[in-house]
View (spheres, rainbow, N blue to C red):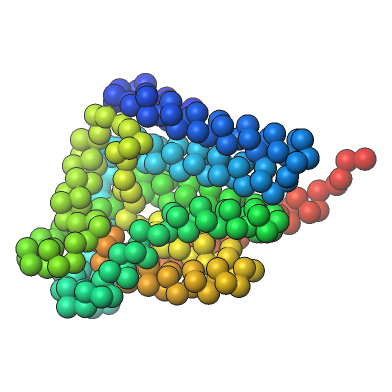
Length: 285
């Protein structure tokens, strides 16, 4: 409802066909999940379909809400973040120069950075099919809480990341091919100033720099995979590489990493608090 209200107030054009297709997909998954659970055919398939539908719905709604927070009158906080970078001896162009000299590791970082959302999707399937419902519910709540906090914080204190304020030599750009490059950083600054005249789920990309939502997803995926040994080991390796990857391929400030970890920790705290209250609630006779 908030998204609809903001669309009516701000008046951007909306890709109704694309959002209609997305709505049909979400509805189909939720109906399928309800059918399997109510019919008793398979609680695991029902949980998988339901959680997949809810996850797609949440990511679509929050990404749209994120864009609807532009234009944003609040000044970017990147100047403060650059001061932290300088104090810690971090320089984004130097980081990209290092990646250009280690191309094999650069490709590993590229894969790891791009894998965070697919990791959550795979984890939903694995937890559902292995009947780890407590972990599945915890994963869903943590993602919702962390995502909401990240978007709301960015709306109040926007940032575009280090990539928006630097240029790179052509040879470095050609070698590294950062997923999020200075050109996209400039697009974020333009969005903060002017907003977007057209909204489509096919066009929306990540805007949040601080806190790093890729870090939030990476740590969340690793944490909730801890009871699936083979998947935990795989996620641990991949997501350790995500740490430098968000700097190289996400164009982040160094402070964005601990900020993402802090958001995850608070979201898990809220998730555990919710579960504890549910366990203490009286059961109806």
